[in-house]
Image 1 (cartoon, helix red, strand yellow):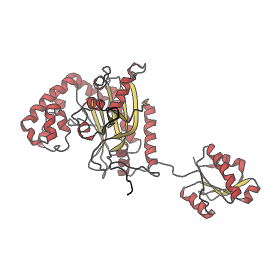
Image 2 (image 1 turned 30 degrees about the vertical axis):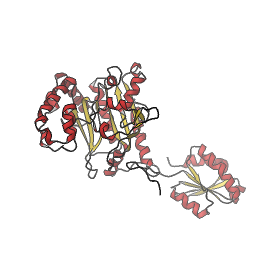
Image 3 (image 1 turned 135 degrees about the horizontal axis):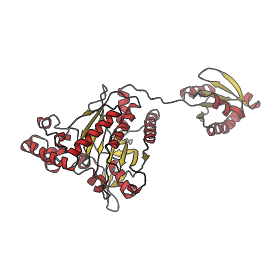
Image 4 (image 1 turned 135 degrees about the vertical axis):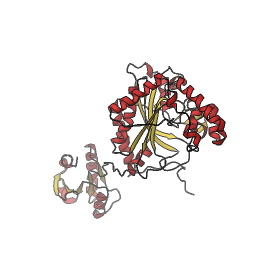
Length: 424
């Protein structure tokens, strides 16, 4: 019986992985321009971290976490998202004491959730995210949103929709919570069992229910925007003012609450309007989480961030028919004819690679015609042919497969010739 890949995971093979590398490099370059530094955290953490940060009423904690007990009888969990780990590292390493604040971080790596696999959603998936910790200025909210928009726009996506909302401060959320409880309680039995449980634990999460999203109770639920206190209203207005100043279009949606318990004030999502993208249109989401650092044992620290799925980004590019400018070919293929030429080719290939050229040669003793076919498949720009006649003259025949031009070059000048004539 052959062993197959676990359900909800994927092999990313050569020919496809280059697209991943391109968008990952785009993310790294973008973060450099915005002065966000990379952080790398463990793939598994103590389960308590996610219980305290993500929230025990969320779908992630209740249904989707990969949790196990190690040999020391400790409960550990494969990280389902990146914010909690990043903030834990920020607190544990006392990054709040660094002279340059706010602390601006980004991460990129695999996350794990046990959910039903579907297009663009896997049980192991890759997230790129950023976190800005230490500033309660609405300008940093706008910066974070602008970085997210730039990530998609600079890759060529146009069918984008930015949705924003305010969840308000603790006072505003408390008033809204009371109103939601009063609204849903009389008819809560009409909603799913999850919503019934959330009525007491976190009624705001009812608005995030996937099963009952079209129920009339959802459409008439009290809006958080009607319960924002003056401070929260001013904060949200400033965020909108800064987005407009940067020319970023957005829509306000009072039903956007996000699925994690640690959010406050600004919440946002970017969606794809591309035809054929799928029923689930959300590309990424984020928001402000001013109490999270304190919740996991650190000082009271404001923070904001977002996370996006690389898988869903690649699907959006495909839906809009965007071809990434990925170079597939190699610089040179070395063809060796005979044992003496084969011996020389070993040192020549090594020399060319040291000169920063992408080079391949035959390792299966193919005939010359088969070696040229291999060079074509690899989209080589040049073929360097070593034969007995060329070696007697201490040279090689070089053919440009793009132009058809061919000339003989001294062996000690091949790397210089290729570097001067290769496509930039």
